[in-house]
Image 1 (cartoon, rainbow, N blue to C red):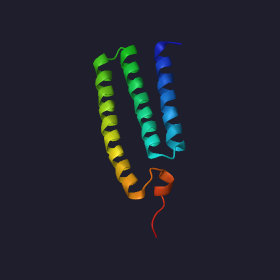
Image 2: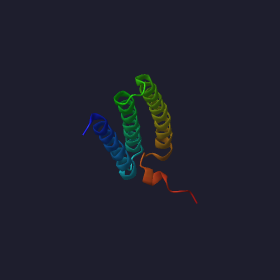
Image 3: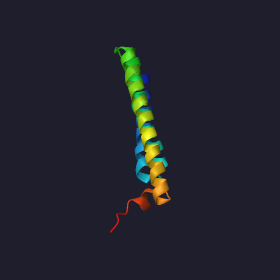
Image 4: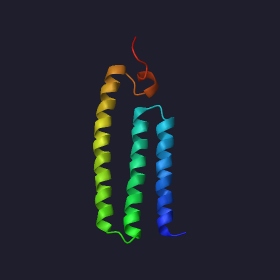
Length: 102
């Protein structure tokens, strides 16, 4: 088994852990952490592919920096939303805020 396959298996493990966490967590913060895991798996796969294939290394690094920037912006936005939901509903549980009024 070569290194590229091992890196892609590790990225797949991060992606599957993120999907499992996203579907099984009830807390909004836990869901945010799961999404961050999925984005880290995508970044790992991108860097490994650019480093271990004849592609230019800088392309994978730039792509991963874009993914990291997206993850930072997404975390900032979601944490602000979680703060507003926490103040309005008094909880961060997704089950209790999913019920519609009336």
